[in-house]
Image 1: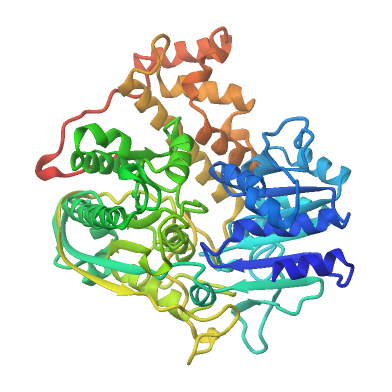
Image 2 (image 1 turned 180 degrees about the vertical axis):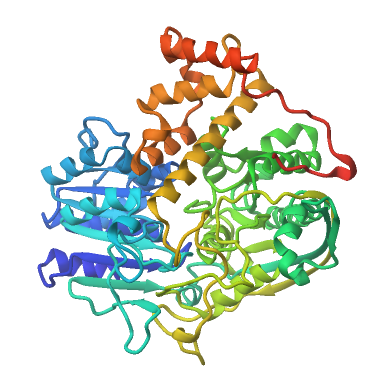
Length: 623
């Protein structure tokens, strides 16, 4: 479909310049920029290609899509893109570049000047991350702007053609998506839907039903595990549930407990056992020479936070032979400097066979070898979970016949996950509802949320049941038997902070970003103290904040939204301890350090945390 549209544009048979590709996760979305870019460049309609991805870990995959020899031969193209930093020459002699939302927000003028010098095809991946700059139905433009959208919008306006891609056409907070054409159905006030007849647009849909019918993705088998949980609440009163599936208003606390105690270990063991048996069957069937062959299957474990991820890794390695443990099971979290290398090895090599991560490896991870996913996370937004389960639905060309391949998702059997499954089966996801939070709904839309003030005591797995999710409706079709205007809003609160009618006001967004940056800085302080990563010099929150200020050339309290986004992106890729030399001869830092020492009796802002384990195997959240 996209190839036909690109051919029509190349032959000047249509005035279409915007192509929206709503492709179910795992449906081959990464090939679309190659197809469209090759056709338009051959016709002389564009000079270069820019592909924007939501995170740094996806840049290499975008490069690989254009370098794939099979598609180079099939399409007859010689285009090469490079993963660019914000340097003077973004393309460096090639036909385009790959960058991230964060990089564009950090230097918007650099990218805009490049677009004004050349005719660009702009490909934006996972467009649903970008809210519309102005939503006149609920807020003024100033209230509704966000840093990424404001930075990318001028590039869209300057591009010769645009390819906008996403696995979902709805946002968790119900807000419209940047640049997309919407219309309000007649007589329906609180629903926006994609305008499929908008002039200048070509909209291509590839639903789960279509992909399954064409055997482009694998059917999903869900393993729902129920269990009990016991914890101490904020008043240190013992609370418990006898089933996660019936936890009701206690679901959040029960899940927090289950993901950090015995239930998680039982679910990990079941996922690991199932994946190991699957690998043994594939090896017996002749897939790959010995234990290191391709096509055997792999396990992806999605943890709720980085500390728990490390605990999961230790648990998994404890079940493996000593000589294999470090080689077969790896972890990819943002604090690890080798995270990108670990993800690449998991994608491209037979080993490691088990990867533990939190969020960086779920969206866009192109690893067809994944056959099992242990979804040990509290997040319950539909777009997030759709991306998570799609890690296992890719067809592996090395794993034998289609019918022999598996996509098994293990998850807690809570009502929020069951509601997500129902939405996948009944909603086509092309409409955005203007939502307000209902009192009975739980705040599970948030990707990063404050830990509840509870102490987990224990949990146990009690039952496991399997079900194959129904294919779901085709793209653009309403759900059978109900009108979209009557659908209840999706679960969850739309943001990490208070807002009015789901609108995130700039001051609240700034506060949230400053808090996140402070949390990451503090985490690096604790990690460097515990691991003795800094041989010489101080290790303190004050010191690391001073270094970050020098690196960013501005204090957080003075940063704009785009600068805060850039600082957050920098912290995800760098260790502050590598830049301590920036304050070695800084008189302002020495003066502030002496002042803090006089006030607190020490330069160090944080003491080394206690390693004492709470009773009953509890995991006490940080205060």
